[in-house]
Length: 190
Image 1 (tube, rainbow, N blue to C red):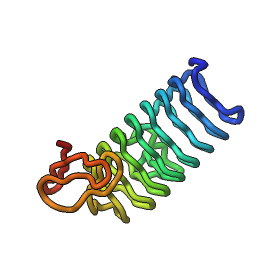
Image 2 (image 1 turned 45 degrees about the vertical axis):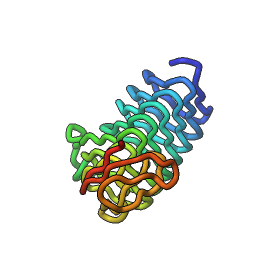
Image 3 (image 1 turned 90 degrees about the vertical axis):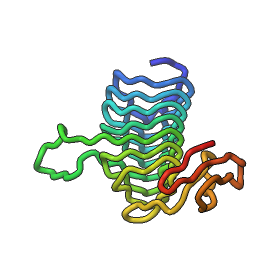
Image 4 (image 1 turned 180 degrees about the vertical axis):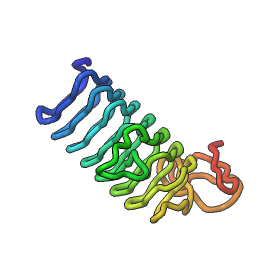
């Protein structure tokens, strides 16, 4: 570990872990051995980061989030307050299922809203936005706007996070003017 990061005195960080420069780990967090946290991350109060979790650069994890083994957060992912990751599809207190953890990958720049739940084993595409309280039970395409229980795509969002006009063909973001091509269930930057 390098001294180029901040760990609050109430946080507990086990060895060995990797923590990148300019990362902050705040009050009452627990980082387990083998975790990898990239540069420029902000880990909010009361966050638990499990063994072997990979959190890449620029991620922001708000208060009261547990990032369990099997989860990978790519660059610039935002995890809203009290959102939930799972890692076993059918847990029982009396049955050991640590060898059944399912992998969950959250793509670059994605946003996971407050109190949403990401059921294990799914991939969330880059720059997707999962609304507050949604429950993700399937793969989410890149740039998708997903809300509800279970989570359903209700539109598309720009890289900057603004909802895009609903039309087939080419669209421009009303905020930043980035352009995209919408073709049914896929959106691609131009």
